[in-house]
Image (cartoon, rainbow, N blue to C red; front, side, top):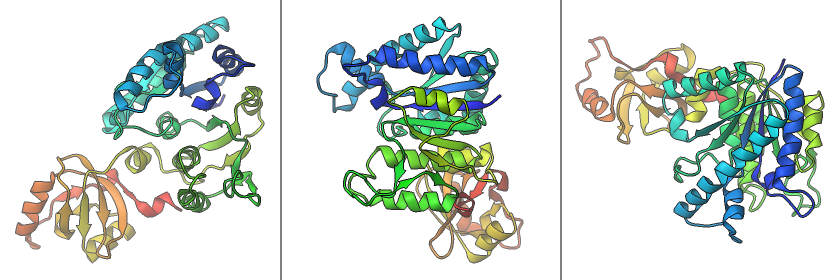
Length: 364
């Protein structure tokens, strides 16, 4: 039995003159049902709400303003779910809709609750259909075409494999539309290679915009948590059947042999930091080499205004980010305490080791 997450991109659900959106979803669901019949557990992260909303409303051009996009998504999401429900019912399975925004992952409790809900649905042999909540999320809450969301969900439920279905056959060394010497990349074996690819894609005028960059982000999150990632061309739904029965995607990102674990992955990837804490040389050494918590005595300064239990980044005396963590004190309390710190008195723990992840662990 394998636990899979399958992310289906917007471009695959638009339909063409040859095949409708309904037919495409029915094809995907046929192979998903076959895999479930064989004992696998599957979660689908599906884009497409805005595109289907435009179709239902007769809009020829995708809206550009946020409120219109949200309203269009609200129309399209119901239709999208009806297609999945109808398709899976044909094969004897129920579906469940789960809509998420980044704010749903901002606390460890909500992160855990989301994973428990998904796991219960899987226990009941229901197919969870997950989408970003486009009808209410604003630009600050958006994940990016559901790629990052699929990786975070995979991490939350400890999936074994993540399939990113899109409209490209594999990853290339550069944009093949612009560079005739672009070479296909069939395997990415470690975190550093993945980071190098991300850095390269971010400076490309076309290759790095949207799709590729978010898929590399998703691959980094998932592989760092021990999940194998397949990037594949889903325009022919049969590729999903092949992957689910033992084949591979056009590019495979291999899992890190030393996974972060769900808590540290949540700290590293799900949270947006709300401030920065600068520390001295002694505190930096203790955190990076001795597995220590961050004590008040080691803090030099704080930037940003944040409440207690907020995610922050930790910056060493050289100005380099070395960790992320959850602070037990608000920014004002830390600033006031810094002024009164007495080295002879036992120092308070500001960030406990259990809610701290080292930056270097994300690239090794």
